[in-house]
Image (cartoon, rainbow over the protein chains, first blue to last red):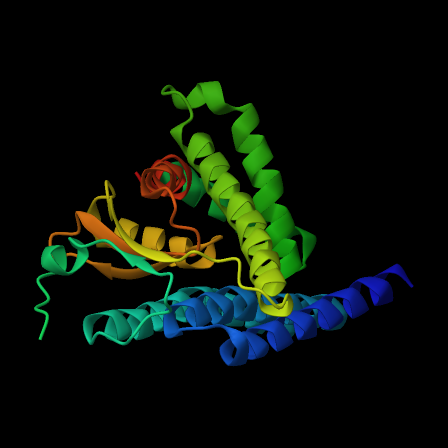
Length: 114
Length: 158
């Protein structure tokens, strides 16, 4: 009973955060802020669902795979967001109006404004 | 690192002796072995470096999960409410982490913690360019990262 409640909680909140990550892409104003939504909420969502999978099946092969999936997600999701954000920043994608940009940032990175 | 090997050996021994060569058996063996090694700590001569490191890794893991949940909830709030509260900005922060492994870990963790997203690192790994959701006070953000994530990572890795 308690296990079932826990599993339902994990799956439902995982689904909720996955939905938030998707909705964030649609609603948030520019590419960098969208990356905030997809990395954080998306990683938490898959982590919660994998936790439910591991606790629900509770056998060694499944738990090992769930752990591997979460570890690789934690490594790759921020790197993906980093590369997308980096490309956007370096190529000068227009940012949302209120954004303040450190004037030294591009010079420190050795990027030229064309 | 030899204490860590000893601990692994104890875990395998525990799994073999209880006849449970499963992930759970190895895990229990590792915890039991860790406690046993912790008890006989004075026998190693030098003060228990290994135990401090395990403690710091645990601290990093727990704090990181806490920050991940906090940041996801704040992102969810921003997505679901009609007005955008964010006053974003791109700021440079000095990086003290040495070596590529530390920089990788710090940048990855920064991307997953509240309000910050790492964008770029300079060639010499000294400056990190981040995108912050609330960039009113860049110095406060830099101080938060330096005293939070970055310090935990350096403590755990060095």
